[in-house]
Image 1 (tube, rainbow, N blue to C red):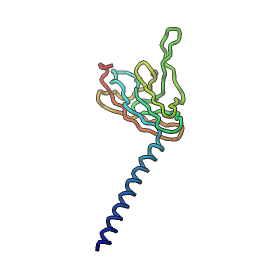
Image 2: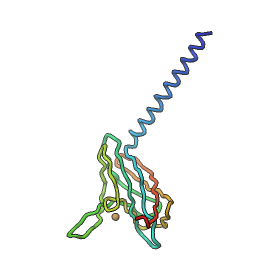
Image 3: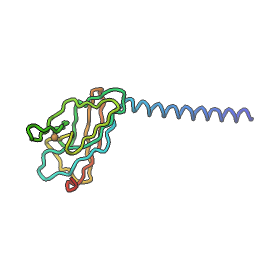
Image 4: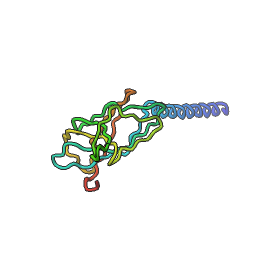
Length: 156
Ligand SMILES: [Cu+2]
C-alpha cells in the first residue's frame, strides 16, 4: 500500500519535472527561433489627405547573430521602408536604408528626429488609439507581425 502511494508520488514528480523541462525548452527555442523583439511601436494620427507617415519603435536583437531587415509591409499603406535622417549642406534629408542591420545583443531606437519606418501611399486614415499591423521579414527567413499604436497628432 505504502509502496503504491510512493510510486504514485514518484510518477507525479516525474511528470512535473517533464513539464518544467518542456516549458523551458519551448521558451528557449522560441527566443532562438525569433531573435528580434519589437517593442512600443507607434505613429501619429493622420490629417485628411495625408499620404505618408513615420513609425517609431524599439528593436532588440536577443539572438546570437546579427539580423538584417529585408522588407516591411503593412495593410494600411502601399509601401514601407526604413529611413535615416541626414543633413547635407544644412538641408535635412531622409535616406532609405536597405537591409537595416540589427547587431547581435544590440537595441536600436527608432525615434522622432532619427531613424524611422516610413509608410507611403496611406490607404486608411490613422485614427487616435487604434492599431494596425506591420509585417517584417528578416534575412534569417523569420517574419514578425507587429502592432503599431496610433497616438493623437496633437501630442506630436
Ligand atoms: Cu522618412
